[in-house]
Image (cartoon, rainbow, N blue to C red; front, side, top):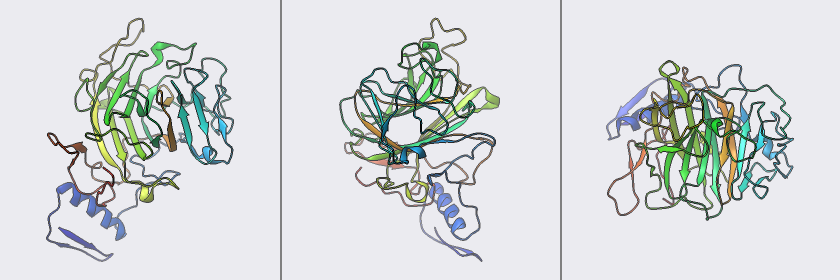
Length: 366
């Protein structure tokens, strides 16, 4: 079906499109005709899937581009307007380096960059400049570029949310404070969600419990290529369960600036954690934690991490969202992206030929 839009009418001509592709294209043409509202964008011009909850503060990495090159030390980043930047790395050799042009380089054996809005800190706390925030229902976005090899198969691009600030890496913490969900694009070319209740034990889920799934079939994550991740985690069913959604942008060129048109997002996966299908790992000695629990509290912290390799990040944001309100982006989220089974050569099976903005999908280099 071919749709031709103007402010006065929309004509439909015969052609073949999938139902999802038709819906996406229709929304795009309605916006072009001025008949639908444009989607909301964040401060970098990146598409927002859910609106920011009123009365909350959005954290962004805009201050990474202030022209001042620097290391983030254990006392934090003095140029962070919130005071929430936190070096929670495992050793003194682990580096969190901001180039002053908008990019953070994480490098070393166990680098951990925390956005820690709480007043809890193991050691000398950075100076907090704004009040704490729960970050319960969140939308986290960022672009990362793998810079070197050397990590384990499960290393790579990772955003973890709902975690507590004291569990990971640094001495003087609390291993029972992990309580987080991570979205991972792994170096081995797979993806998964990781659920960690007590540090360091964790379990994973992708299309099923205990397993990761192909993201770049037959390939590892490429070195030197910017890849976008968008991760949503929010409570559903009256707050009893947690919905996880992960999206990827492998198309946008962000080497010299933000992605065009809000990014080129495709859905990697989604699930609802009721605790039973996605059990956690070891919780021994941790009062209040059970392996069958969903992580329904916010805990105020997000982290970015890798191990034993270098990775760059830019255009990072963390927002508290209102999941009950939609932005009018689509009748549904972008269609799922998954690997074709039984193929010798890497190929993609698409549930639609158009992304969230009605654009044709073309993934160069894959």
